[in-house]
Image (cartoon, rainbow, N blue to C red; front, side):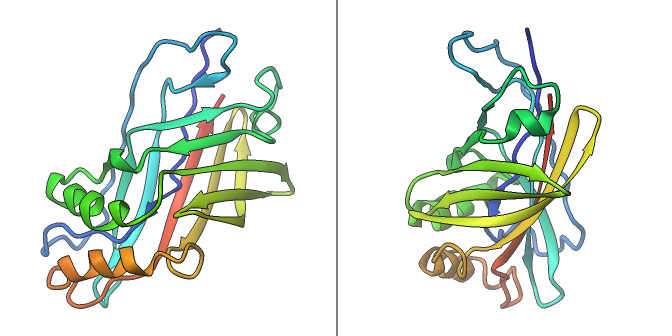
Length: 203
């Protein structure tokens, strides 16, 4: 049976980004893909997904939104009626080379000056969804961090929100400084280490 999900903004979110200096509003990016259903013995699906992260630049803390094109999710309980039950123990993986902010120049900087300075891709695990909160293990730059995220459930759609600090949480100061230096003028001398993300998953 074909299933769809709108998944993981996470964290990539995990980078401040530089584009055109005159950009003063948040940029929205929605990436939708259609692929064949994975074999039944492999409960991994990448059918439809929406990936959104928001990083910040300039002293005014202007938000820049983007996504990752390659995000995979493996349900722990694919036959569960509720999406939150299906996700209890589910794992995800984000290919950082697929970063997409709808600006090729910015994406090149994010890939070459940020993610290439870090260790591996981003992956993690969702734990129990209860009372509007879900603890999520996030593995990034060789470091695993547990973050308590919030969520809202509406029918078969769950929206998960949270934030990370790429230095305090994942010790990514060398990568952060590398990107900050190349984007210093466009960022008016200020890059922010916190990144917000929203994950929408539909089962």
